[in-house]
Length: 349
Length: 268
Image 1 (spheres, one colour):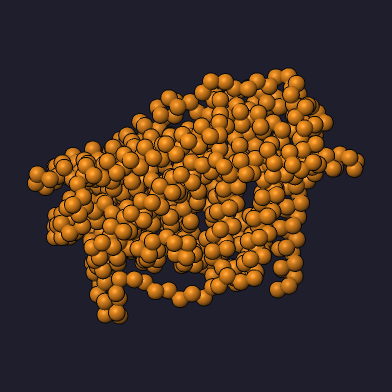
Image 2 (image 1 turned 45 degrees about the vertical axis):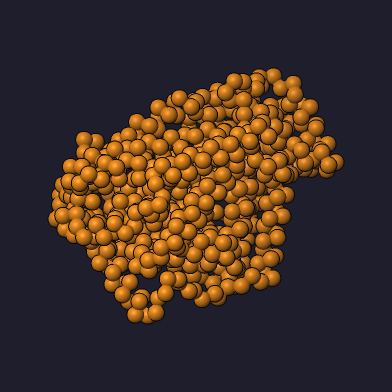
């Protein structure tokens, strides 16, 4: 499931962008440490392969609905975690640009949700230990199933966390979790089966591909799984710490300093004209009858709405009319500009 | 024929990006920065904002007309795009039923207002992302990312991926066509058939990668991709970026819709 721009706040989007860029930089560094020219075309073409494979759909047994491949696990098994993460990030970037899956701000979240978990959690902590003691095709199926499910559960849970931190949706946490996790349990199982199927197919046809690739491109021997895990834990704690710092520094729902820079209520104080108008509207909305601030867990939303009220036409008929009229005028004007440019352009050619 | 459509769309967007207009001629870095700034500004609006978002439509509309991009094609893509925002947003009216506005006797709850806000944001952010790629070639965007300090390995990965998407998509299309011709109804679309198809595709991919690698070696490949740089940051870029950032900032800070409304009321 792709996270979407519209559900994100700038703070959450930027934090995950930073985290994903950091992971890309780290993986690039790791790949540079033992350079292998052959890996570059291999990664590129495998990225295109995942892309093409995602476009082929198949029927999910028992449901009749169609599914498609995620691909993170297949890449991790074939290329090893570092290269797989870079490939996954590149596939998601191209999707964000050409199919607008999610959007550009959400790209950081999507790389995190669909790249980090298969490459740095499911593969090293589950798939690898399970297939260590001899590679039978049954073992591969079991390992792929478990790691597929774990990766997708973590990814889905991250979507919930990101949405919650952004405060744009009003879904209660529990409902959201109950909505996301079971759906992704099914998706994870399918992903696991398909991963196992493809890996076993390749193993039967050309086993040397898997062996040569896996032996040379594992996590380098000096990096133990524990180290990677501790590293990820540190990243998680830092991210969480940074986020909660934002939260405490600015109580209205994790709005970042951007919100402070742009925030309408603060700025107009200096600009006399607007401040005057805003204060007027504020005065009117203050004794607005049915308006209740939300309390409890939706505190953030409530406070934002408090801010908001000032810019939205209030229930007082005069301002409502001016709001709707203004909207219509602005929209009309924008379309007129666009249309005008088109006409001028056509006349020229 | 979902596959053929997806493939066609990819190719068409790529073709659009090689047009020659004022917008297309701008430096990719300029467009990338402007688009990112636009998205962050739009998303920074709080959850109950609707009227403040409307003036931001100016940015996509200007890009559509100045860059001569077919509106219908992009709109279709926006509609088809993953509907995640819609499915999550539609819960807002369910959970937030507090009345927010009364407008000529019709009560609008906070949930519908925040849902509308999410959908407008969705429309604006997705459209601007698609317009970025429709006005800037993908290699251009990669070069911009490289200049911004993204690691070289990731850049060459993106360039490689993009170059071979079309090749592999065509190969996958052949396989899918073969499957469709030989199968009837739902047969041939089982997971076992799928893994066979993907496995075959994978083997062909690996063989292709080996051939590509040999071809690259014989042409002197030494681990890094070099690209020509036909773009430069010119005066036009500076003007475009300054105007965009200033206007976006002003639209974010001032209540244009309210001002227009009050103005029109005072006139009539």
